[in-house]
Image: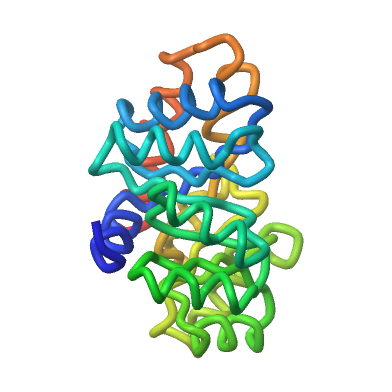
Length: 214
């Protein structure tokens, strides 16, 4: 899977799940359950114990899953994730060496940004998508719309505080995808292996994306 294919899948699905749980087993369960629910995208954050092995396992078992690494803050971590098979690298902010590492390997780069200057800097540095984080505290969908109007050529992911109540509005405002964590994969649902609950939440969020695009 090359960079363009990964971006196309993320845009098509419109959901960018951030998996931040307390163990490798729980991360695997969350990613696999979302995959079966129709969301073949998973960001495994570096805060997950054994995150790189989780990425390696998912990349090996699910060739069509867009699995990548989140909160990648340095070149060494980026290289380890890429060697494990990560199909994208994302950071909380702009880390140029992480973007450069991704571009060298034809892997999707998704840095975080907030202000117009940061968004433009990330785009000029080679970002395929830019994660607007944290979106909710600074104005939510209205803020994202304000960014998108003068920068229509930059693909944005809304992240940080996206809920069931606001998801549709972010998509309508121009977000290419929604970065969602606990609202989609609640920690207690993961701990208790509540497949049905996670599948229902996945169905809802996919519906919010469809509604926002209509």
